[in-house]
Each structure stands twice: as structure tokens, then as C-alpha cells.
Length: 516
Image (cartoon, rainbow, N blue to C red; front, top):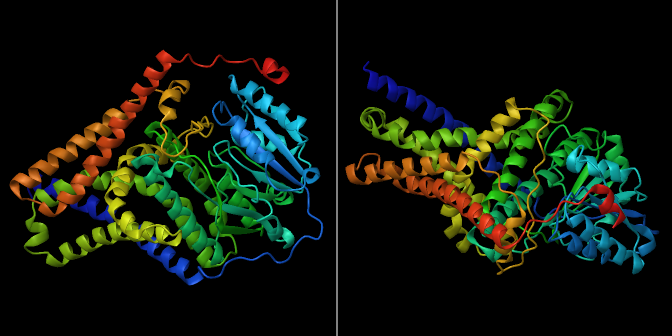
């Protein structure tokens, strides 16, 4: 066997292996769709209603949220719940002027008669998990609602969820995320569809079929006793919400997902913020899998729960084979196509079927999620290539996050997603971009290089006619890598331009922030 044949054999083996892994997760998407339709009509109902409403604490964790701090505090104070039964905690770890803005907003709300507690830590030990744990020490509510700074909860959010807790086994109730700035750009539209799929299909399928789901870190209410019984907030992973969710359900606490209750939130309007968010979620889920998956598999839980937990906690790992697949796609089919076409027609059919299965499962998944919330499936169908491109574009970042989660340090800094206070159709965030520090890395160069490599493969395929069936995928992959890489540089440029015209906020000493 010649060296070329050996190289091609290696490509074929790696290609089929990665394709097989991705196909398994693609099949799992169909299983989730099946479970969704099987249980979609089983809408959860409260077991009863409280004769006397319980006391609720609303926790608002934030860190340097200059543009949204006042908005979330004011929205929390507008929640329609008896004021003498509602405590609001602003858990602020800010180190800039936003600490003063948040403190002033709390003072305004207190003068209006609201029970608002401002908690400012002098360090960020445990990051968000540490702030939530600190707030529990002075929380007076039997139940704890959590809203991140980029959310704008509707006034009826607690009244729509609190009565589920009449069942003493319910530990957490999660609402569905809405999107304030869904139509702001192609990026925000894609993010909205990604999240809609996660909530409408995944959450509904898992929760209503008796499998484990996760609290999403915000827009939900916990029974305080469930948090304490499950070991409290822990910060040895970057996804403290998923970690607590699995520990809680392992303890026997039940979760409820209320799909019809929508809590509006802001989507990251620029690529760097989106990539930071995805990196944190991906790395954190891998860390949680390492921490808890062995316990889940050793437990006496039903097999269906264990299998779904495996897919749930390991789903982020697919980004590594996705990167490998994108690099091997063209050379595998172009170097010696006779391996596929001349003597192994069956192999060709199987491989192409797996590729088609993988592609169609994602398209079906997201189209049905949009149908479930009353949006156009045709418009979503037209968005499928862009969804695939963006997913591939961030695969390099998320692939590194997977490796960091597996082999990296556990004391990784919690890099929160910048919030710009944007609304649909506005580009105010571009003027505010200079406020957020954009760390320079080598990754965009690699993403652009991968995009150029895909483009070169695309050109060769079109000119020579070899592996012509890969052309649509090469085009999508090339666009995805180039889009993410170039838009990263564009975001940095916007940040530098905004920074030159608008001075950065001056850091405020902790003592001065508290005394302000």
C-alpha cells in the first residue's frame, strides 16, 4: 500500500469515526422530537394553590452591568406580588461605576416602599455561584427567584409559577427564555432559534417524559430547602446551574418546565460576547459531566434517565469531532474516490446516509421548535444553512472549551457575557462596545485559516469535479469559519473605535461603592 493510500485510509477511518459519533447524537435529536410530540399535550398543572402566599426572595446577580443594572432592579420591583412577601436582593460584585448605579437604583426603589437589599462583595470568590450562596445567608424567602441582569421579567412571573410548589416534592420551576432583540441581526436570529430549540424541544421532552432537565441559571424559582438539601451553590464548575440541577434531581427533587411562561432577555449582539457565552456553557457542561455523570450512572435511576443524562451532559463534546469532520470532508472524498464509488457502493450509501441524517436532524429539530412557538417554519428552513454555518464557525472555540473542561484547570475565571441594554432594531451596543474589554487571542486567525482552507477545497471541487457532492457543505463550513473569525475582528474594531470616543468607566473601590 502506497503512502498516499495509507494517508487516505487514515482519513477514511477518522472521517467515518467522527461521522458515526455525530450521527449518534443526530439520532438522539430525533428521539427528543419524538418525546416532545408524545408528551407535548401533557401540560404541567399545579397540584393546588396556596391559601396564604409564601414569602419569596428575588436574587439579581450582577457584575459590571452599567447598561442594564437599573433596568433589572426596576423590573423586579414591578413584579406583581404582595410587597410584604417579596424581598429583592441585588447581589453585585461590580468593580466599576455600575456599582454606584445599582446602589442608586436600590435606594430609589426603597424610597418607593420596596424591600430591596443591596449586597456588594469585595471579592468574586465563587463568581455567580458565590454571590448566590452569599445572598442565601440573608434571604428571608421560602422560595428564591433568580434573574440575570439581561432579563426583564414580566410582572406575573411569580404568580404564574409559585403554586407549582404546593407539591412538596417540587424543587425548581423554570420558565422559557424570550428574546428582546431577536430581530436585531442575523446573529441574534440564529441565537434565538438555538435557544428556542433547547427550551421548547429539549426541556419539554426531558421534563414531561420523566427525565432530568436543568435549571438555566436564570428565569426560574427554587425552593430554598431544595438548594440547601442538594449541597448548595458550588463553584467547581462554570455551569453552577447545571451542577445544582443534577445534584438536586439525584436527591429526588422534581423540576417543572413551564413552556408557556416567557421571560424576555437580551441576546449578545456581537460575536465575541456570543463566543464567550458558548465557551463558558460548553466548558462548564464538560466539567459537570466529569463531576456528576459517574454518580448518575451508578445510581438506581431508570435506564431512560441515565441514557438521557449521558447525552445531556456529553452533548458539548461533539464539537471536537465536528472540527475534525470539517477538515477531513474534502480530502476523504477527493483523494481516492474509487474506494467509495467503484467497489464499495454500500459504504458510500451508508456514509452519505449518516451525513444526511446528521444534517436533517438539526434542521428538523429547529424547524419544529419554531413551529411550537408559532413562528414560520418556512423562514426557519431558509435559516438552516446559516444555523449550520454559525454552529460550525464556533466549533473551534467550543472544541477548545471541551478540551479545557477535560484537561484544564478547574479554577477558571467566570467570564460573564457583556450586556448592552439593547432593544430590537437598535444598534446602541456599537457605541457602548468600548466599555467591555476585548481580549486578543490567536483563535480568530485559526478560524479564518480554516475558512480559507474550506474555500480552497470548494474551488478545487468545483473546478475538478472531484467530490462534487461535498460542495454545499464546504460552502457552509467556509462561510461559518470566515464569518465568525472576521466578525471577531470587527467586534474588536468597534470596541477600539468606541473606546476612543467614550472613556472607559473608572473603577470604583468597594468601600466607596457601598457607601455611595
